Image (cartoon, rainbow, N blue to C red; front, top):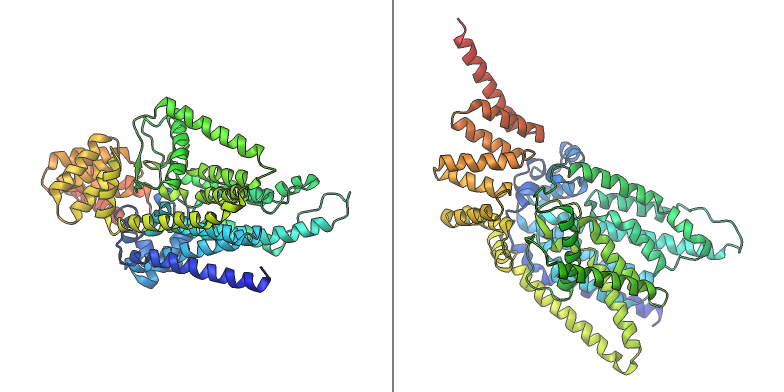
Length: 551
């Protein structure tokens, strides 16, 4: 294929990839926000929903709300609110445009590095159309996924351009010449900048420097003799950014780690191993996809051991085949490595795994499959004509399941009904479904789901809080007091829970206890004017009463 013909084919693929992606996700523009994270990120966050401002930008860089430091994600939401207000269509459209751009950048990156146009197109299409990725696109609050991936792709593109230039200069260097110094070219600096932006969008991409080393091995093929050390040295600035991001994340998430006694380290290790298997399973057979996957009571020890053995065996096989088929090792360790930050070794949140965590890691599996299948069919040239058909059927299946999965994201009620249907003992989903029912006036049904959430996991603060709040609204004062107190004690760093319990205590004649809750709310969130106002009113009332009692 000559250069002009390849350019036309590349343009055609880009157009088709973008058009189909936009078409399959088009129903998203008629979807609503959901009551899980969207209130915290958008609907109830005055810093964000008032639009873009200097004070908002400063807040974005200072904020650790929702146990994350991702200032660029906050700013992107502010821009959306500035442009679209709180109309869901605009927010969903921006997510979709980022996702489409990510798929196109992935295709261009792989084609640039490998020259294999159709295999690169398959990987990009699988990334764009796989149902596991619906969550990252359809959920407004998951802007951090598509935004960080956008900077991830730009980082790799800039790095690939730098690497090609640097490899050429190294090849021109005379034999026996001392180790070449790292050339911090424009594209190297741009890669570093894009990586920093990605970390400020979502810290999960901290593993990117390791991916750069994998790409140096294949397809960039930069590992050679004396230059191996240079490849590590030139990654030091990237690893420094990774270290800084990890330290910041550990600090801001210190109060958000799930502390249930059932999640001891051995059990988290078991869950990590099983999660790898589940991610692989759902990549090849994406059924029963859910917004929240609850932790099971236990994992069968035999299953855990079997999974660990398989993972280790595959790792060893791919390492042994690294010289003959380097893409197998690169794809496999891309998948394993990029999942490490979200595999649950440090547990934040209630989920045992999440579809959104596969957004970038799954690329490794797609790479492994695309190049592996091509290599396999090379052994049977007469059968290679069936390979495009197999690829087409697989992508068509992805599109069909993605369309179905996308339909569950119409609103809170549909997504949590589906989640409850395909999972068991899912207290977080029960609680969210109860909230969805309460919002449409079905309080009796809501109470049943709240009660189910509390029965399954008494130490889940949100379940206790929502049940208590509903009890308060329906006149069950004693029950409300008990549940709200449990929730507030379980989540001392949740400003809203402390504040609402404080208001309840004021309304029911316990001003001294209420003051303590307002102080706790301000300790968790100093810029909480309502809590400050309530506290000042209580102090004023206390001082006035004291003055009246003085002779």
